[in-house]
Length: 554
Image 1 (cartoon, rainbow, N blue to C red):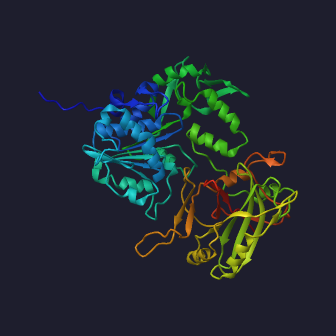
Image 2: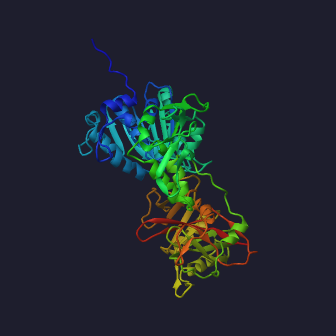
Image 3: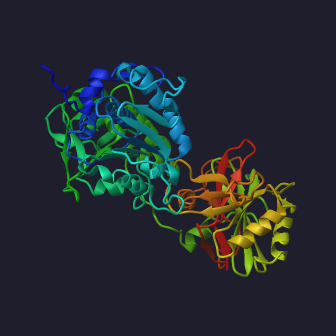
């Protein structure tokens, strides 16, 4: 008597079939859900038999979230074949994901190896960004590719690191909305998995999706009194300067639990909804690295990382995002004038401080002038406003641009002797005279000048993208010697507020933390903060650094 194959959940499929190799895992061998018990319900919600259509996973690092998504992709290819779309923040990251995650998944899991032919085989249907299998196909793309997001219909969507997606894709809208539109024809059978570490409160996509869900937390028991609780960082206590003393204290009886207690705690844990979701077909999970199993990220290391981050706002932000899986609350869009005055140090406008190692400049294009700020930079993003230059004249005329070009030949005297020149100058092209700006930059043809354009959104993976050719032939082919545009997303200037909120720590005249410093101008010279004009420093080693046009004096 013929019987249909058993309908497995994703966790059951992984237990039966998934193999982890040393190429992509620190713990090779058969998959064991008992190693990370909190992933079971997350994976099972992705199963074809589960009623959820959208599964949201807001998480910290070192919790195994990526492997749960890979298990789901393996489950699809082997057990529920259908078209699937996996989206990384960029196409380049999608290629890396294919090489480092998908290829090992296929090669090391026998059940998948026999269904997807090797890429080197002729007509195998297996390419870097496309994996064909009986009954379906897995396509990988980047959230920065509008073509990739609308190239196919898909029943299953794996949207990874959504907080690093651009805010808009080629003018076609939000990449999550574009991707989810590809699954609508599958009706109630569709499934989307949204995963990410969060970023900035109020801008974080994953936080927005999680708050709209039933907001599940993983509750674990106290090893002394049995009280069920979800782990909070404020209950991880240790003696100052001694992270090895870190213990988790029960919220009910204050019993200190040790690292080795984690295994029993996780094994007895359960997910509980803490809110009523707006959509009954969307469920959300949140977990931090406090739950990382024994042998991965320890409580001692978390305590050590927290102590090391003190006094460094950018490191504290990273800790909250990647360890606690929480958003960072910005303190405000701009520091008030009193705080700006406090940033002054004893160097004159037009003089490069001794700590500065390189000069960059950013140009704001106004209707009747060009405004240029020159900044000195040290290691760790510490910066000094060196000069502010206003060039009068319409940006449509030649003269202001010729004067701007002469700035690149100007020497700025350095404290202690010597002089420096601007290494990189970037021009904001996002105003009303974009065509005129492009024309003048083409005429100047100076490799130190780069056109930039600010775009909305938060992209932690690539806050600066490019360069992208802007000139094309009639047939649409890009010219090799075209003007090349850099785009800069919201995440780049957000470091600025942190820099103004940090106190200067100096050793031998070299600043050791990221701060922003003003010259000794008069206190009644008012400065205004502008975060839309950004400067990109493209180093000779082909690594992109970021600077910002910050102030215009008025």
